[in-house]
Amino acid sequence: MNVHSRPIIFLSIGGLIFSLSGVAVAYSSMGTSAVGFYRMLLGGLALAIFAYVKKFPFQTTRKSFIYACLAGFALALDMYWWHKSIRMVGPGLGAILTNCQSFSLAIFAYFLFQERITIVYFLSLMLALVGIFLISGMGAVLHGSGALSAEYIWGVAMGLGSAVAYALCVVFIKISQQTERPTHPVVNMVILCAAATLFLLVSSLAEGESLTIPDSKNLMTLIAYGLIVQGVAWLMVSSAIPYVKTSLAGLILLSEPVGTYLIDILFFSAKPTVVALAGIALTLTGVYVGSLYGTAKVAKTS
View 1: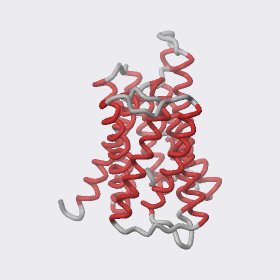
View 2: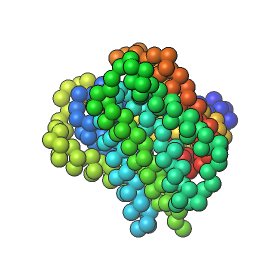
View 3: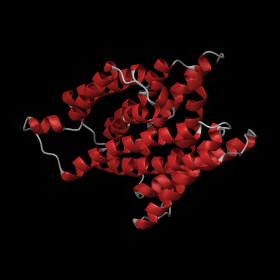
């Protein structure tokens, strides 16, 4: 592995590992908030140990700390809605819905950071919305070939809500790093994980979800979700992105929803139609083109 190929390999592996996120939630029998709690707890501990071993400075400013905590709460809300969406619509569609954060992010970028939104970005947004329309099954209803349950509609709404929450998380992370003495990114993520862990602990207790890990299957799932997805994958991707062209990074990371949907087809109950597959293609094309020609530089954090 040479110095030029290593970032691309790390980015590819990290993006594929992210595909396990929706599967982990669908596979676990624990409550949705409890699953998120263990992801952030285990992932945060792994990142804290990594930062300690690497001797990263555990120093931060008041502004960075506050916004890192806000980012953590936003990410926890993202996970809260996303996990519930996965249980209602499946991990494949759930992953695609939450990846629409690029479009929520464009709105925040325009008003908060005065970033220009191009006509290409607007057209890509429309393209992706059409794709989501087809994937979600709305097209089948219009053609009289099916009916959507209230739970399914709520699942789609929560998936889109999680995209907005994730965009807020990215905005808060960006602001937290805009200081004279920015916190080290890994340490910043440790603070974020701690705040998200607290939020998800409260939501677990409020909803009466048990934090007891019932069996070895759930234990292994949580370890994979926390240590591998939140810890290892994030470190690989964040380490690789600075050394890879933005267009290439966006293309590689879009393998996440595709990988998740394929896993949903192979191992779960998803039965995609030609319309749904066309919707996937339109959505991924829209997200990729929009990220490349719109406000891609804002959405670097994964």
